[in-house]
Length: 260
Image (cartoon, rainbow, N blue to C red; front, side, top):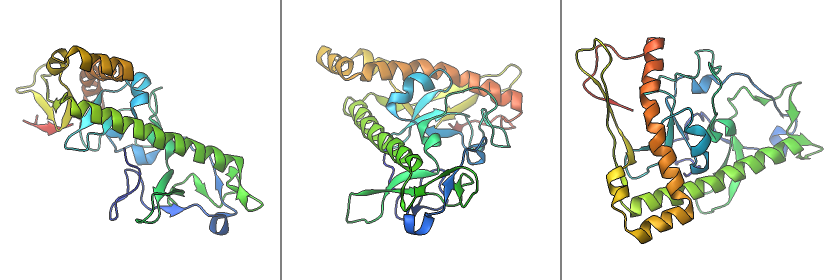
């Protein structure tokens, strides 16, 4: 899961990206916020493989379509719909919050295309970072504060988890275990089903057909447990659909096809 932004596009949530510097941000602070309005209209959030366990209790876990099969936690089934976050940006229920969300507005990013070095950057448009009287100072006497060191440590852990996730996804791809997913949901009284496509999932048929040595490798790497967490979580798709129904956020008229 690459965190370095493409040359002309920033990652999900980020409006701008600026390197954190004691020269420029020496009097800036980070403060806790109780709302995430940037999340309210996002239906799918990137997930690292080590989060599959806790996330699978609340969200369906799928893989993005195409070659870049990033794991995603579905917080809604339709674009612009998040069934766990209100319009005010506050969580409407007690759920696991993916590390990708908790990392914002910070991230490690490449500042130069000719170097692999990553620098701690942040989105200056975020409400949680700025020249505040409250909050935790990012620098003390020109040096990174403990808060900044903790943020850097979390971002480094996220990058490492992203590398492990990329290795896991490559393992799935090498074994040709991923297939295009499709879910049909027929609500009571509806003339035709809602059909959700536009994602990938592990094929249980191909999983059963693995050779013994291939299955043993998945067990030893821990990948098999992740696969089953993903497969078990798919039963939550209908629960998310039900949440959308209750919120009145299911498209009308019933679509013939809708990407997840």
